[in-house]
Length: 624
Image (tube, rainbow, N blue to C red):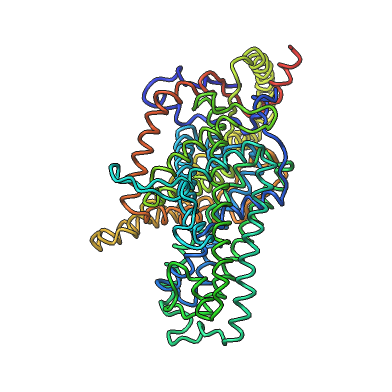
């Protein structure tokens, strides 16, 4: 049995020096913290997961996006734009559902990429998610105070100690209300996952009631007035199919949030059953609500007459129903509060997962014995987010939130391809098990020697039938050849998608160069997809992680479509957004090189074939 050191010191050259970037951790980490010191409470079921997913996804965007997208892109076909965006989001949801049920530990996309891809990519994903949840939570908190003021009567209706204050010397506007709200939510999260999930579910339910009121009341008024929005001269598709697709790309970001369900995987009672149900139900509820609200609002008012800032309220006001504005504003506040909880909930768990793996200080992995949540991480992230919300107008940084999410969506889809075609066949075990590993290795080598003698005898008896020996050798080499083809095909798909989406998006390139690069990218993509469709998936996928859960359908086509959609959206986020994100990622690279790389829990491990792991642990237990 072959085994090797986790640091790769025994191999020379550049490949050995960079091997730490590709080292992968074990699927099931329960043995590493079975003493209970790092265990989170198993308290969540499907209703709580749906509350977290819907609450994190439906923010105040639905109260604004309806008007903007209808006026500028989709027109009355806004409902179709939401449907297409929902289908695109479902591609990622399918991938998340399988990985969450197979690997139900905290960390979400960071955890999955560490298992399937490697430590370097996992660090980038984790570092990007930290930025996403920090800026996302601060931006949401900043949006609550003006809406809350409208509930109380106007822009200056908040108590003086909660009003925004302009500081001339520093040229900043501080927002005490936003900071207070972040700290209140942080305190709520410190009480425990069961308590915070209950509060978020209640707030989400109230927000859903407001949206249902908009649908029912708006539908009644629209029937009374004859659905005037659908009788405009431009027809149902005034901007054509391109406008509908452009609208879909814009509203796609309103579906971001269901991945918060995956971040709570370790706290779910029955993860193999409940996590896929929670993710699927959350996304379905959000899609149906978005489509119904957009269908009603577009029917109340012609799309070109919509108010881009307050489309729902103005639609009712144009029909002489002024009092509804207070209900809708209250719904926006509830949506923002629920979204704030959804933004602050996953980040401590990401930090905890990274600290468990040694990539961050162990301070972040401490779990409170009474509440069974990472209290220290929660308090620290809450204070940081509150400070950011108090001092900075983070609206200009909101695009950076999308980078972390889309990177996570992309790498989760890539992880599905790796899991199905080239799953990790070696598992890292602590060096403390070296005696058991050597014992099993010795037994295996002895058996192997005996098998060699037997095979020699068989080969002598089969001298008249040389095809028997040939078939045995062919069987041993076929799996290795298949894995190599699959690995190169997955790489070809990723490179092809990057070339295709980049060249298709950069319209300033010369047409000849643009069409040539698009053709090259398309050929690489289709070639890799064809090979994956032709070869068989790895049999080891049946035993990868926790079995018996959800299985992503239509592999490899569905994950490849997911990669293509998310890569296209990433490329089109803008140069300014990518410049700011690059600075953050560059900082993360230095943190990893000077701390995470040398403190990783995989520094002192031995990689052994996965088929022998249980035998090694049984041997260690018998010796103990």
